[in-house]
Image (cartoon, rainbow, N blue to C red; front, side):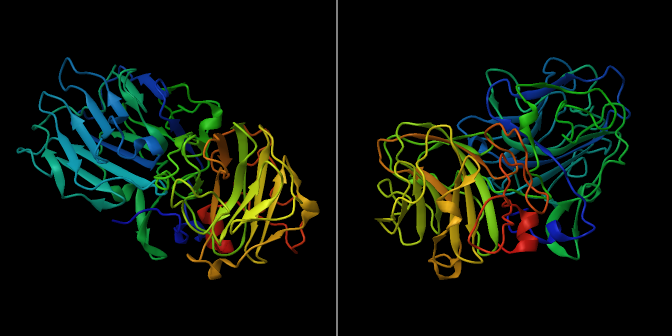
Length: 483
């Protein structure tokens, strides 16, 4: 199954590629949603409709303890009944309509990759005389699904459950007693009156025939009950770009507008590398609270092999100054090893300003870290140097710490990493890789290529390497600048 993966550089670099500018981050908390009551107008065609959206998973949506609700049309009492889109506890997706001749499609495949963007296109047409696969089709990343755990199709001429008039419609949750979606949504569209295939929303092209990517959908006729959420207005995240009734944002702020999108995929913290760390994730995989019983670290989702890269981590809360911020060529491997204890991992010790590597500490030429400080990370894989900054000022007068070339490490790449020095410590770390910061950014400075929104300028400061152009870790930069 083709996926939009961090290595998706073909779609990122094509000069004619369509750009999805924004997505919306849902943090999985109760009451975090977009909601409206659908217009009272009759549907353009109550039997025919299409739903399309892109999704990137937060930690809480990967095999969750309770089903996560992405969408819910709340009409259980009368025909045609409610409609739900859920991520189930077994890591699968389910598209289900209730009684009154409803339908249910649950593909066998599971969704567990927090570094990928997934596209879903659901086609509803209840006009066929016999309920069958011609009545309901589901595409995932451009591929028509034929393998289902559950497969039930709508009765002939059944009213479409997700284009009903005058119905409460929340996106991101259902009600306080139900689990809320954790992750990102982009290009959310419902089309009333047309049964559209996936190729109306995305494409495989000659530049990247194995990668499904978005196309411009702004010209699609939406119909009376249709809408299009492009999330480009940070002051009104529920704005219907199709001109219809807007959704109201509840516990979704301008800071939840992300540039992490299906056409420019940003690094986040990797919840799959959490077996030993046992950290708690939130804010779209950009915030962690570490476990006070373990001494280990968490890593980013994108490995880096070349180029110059920048990211920020805010030490929001620390039980002590013994915290480590840096890079590693491997994920955490036990509950008793800290960042910098292995041959190719490096960590700035927040307590004394030393660099910890291969179980050795450097001289204290760097600075101590206090609670609330923002640590800038500058990884120069062209000159094999690592730099750190505190609140915008590069440490050690811009003299970098020499690191082993990525190609000579055990894995051939480095990952952003941070964690605890001592098992009894706790750290609340809020990361900003540029796509959607976990902490509030006041200046929103982009990198030299125009990507990311950082508190401090990635290209400012003194460095002993020739170039200052450190870039955000995202697929557009990977395509043009190595990585």
